[in-house]
View (cartoon, rainbow, N blue to C red):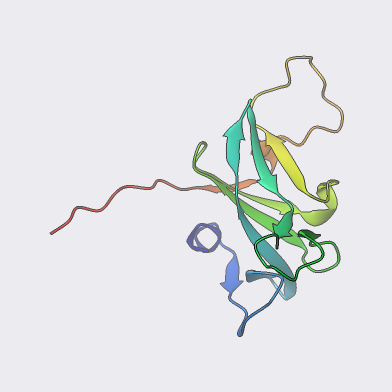
Length: 132
């Protein structure tokens, strides 16, 4: 939230429980629903889940549920790059996971590649606080 606000976006939190989105971003009157995820840096890419997992609930029939039609964007923070990325859901074709390339693919492919730098909105420096 802080990284998005520092990037000049107006950020709100929905009231209540069980919303499929974590934040609302106001871009001069255009509201977008945002789901927050943590990305992991693996093999030159930031990988993140595009579905929620319900496998821990005993009565859940669907162990994974995507966000299609329920959110507008993913906000992804990756500790490995310290980047915060805002990705429109229509840019993510997968129903379970997606990735943003930090390094170019080894095979030289350029088409249909999502580069992290194109979605980065902020960098976050996490510094441990001193105990008093």
